[in-house]
Image (cartoon, rainbow, N blue to C red; front, side, top):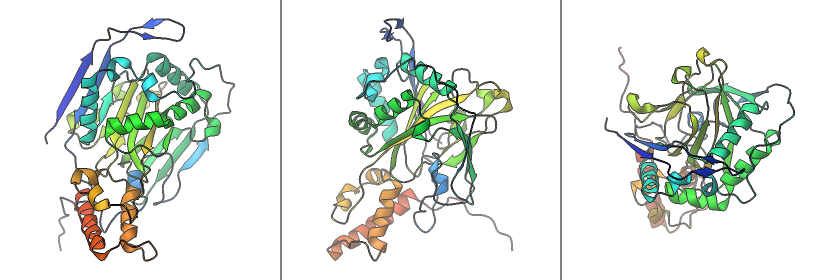
Length: 370
């Protein structure tokens, strides 16, 4: 299996200036991995709400049911936040300028994500913001245990804060920052994906025994996934590693760390999972803030989708909901029809290409002895 690893080491000549006027100099590291994309399988069309594609936020539409949440401890009084994001803050305002002001680094990130690779950015955000988010995650007691297992083999067990009523002011401000139009425009330009729809994000905490089995995140209108790792005392032996399945084993593990931003384009090939957290992790927390940017486009019969999706690269950017919309145009007798008939046949051919490219047949078959 072919792969390469690109590592850019940037010595931070400039310093990040904190709110109180102090100076914090640090070294930035960007690591991006080039995986050979593995195939996934789907028989007889798109699986609506595939559980193995979901990957979080307790939202599933197939399998054994909705995830089960159980509240944690009684809430304690919160201390005053150590950092505040002003209204209208965009992601460019809090990203590490030593990384994102460098045109070559930006081009590397763009290339990696457009190639379907995982992009791992060390020291991604300015340190005062990252430290404040870590403190909020470490301090919160609003965690709910989310756990469920499904008929197709997918399952998960982890702690989250999903209810906005339980969000601290800084969590709400972070969500607002990820949701601004300027942020979504920046991410669309960076990733080559449509990020103009909603943005959702939430805190995550994995404790002993927690895990998330293989999935792709390819659900609904999810377009680009982000995981902002915020664990300060984590070791590889504690488990809880993000395993990027398309990558060879030697490079597939991304262990939890502090202020590391992971980005990837959500497709049927973005298979990954989180390994079980070991008992050795006792007294340590695997903390993160993660979510997705979504596409806002819903295909309509009047859209020139034959031209919009003419190449395999364009078809690879389809969300699960967009594929289902194309299926509905062709299969749902109550849906608006594609006219004229010649266009209808062209979209039938387009759908065939989509299914063959995004949901190929398995490369293996079981050996059956009669």
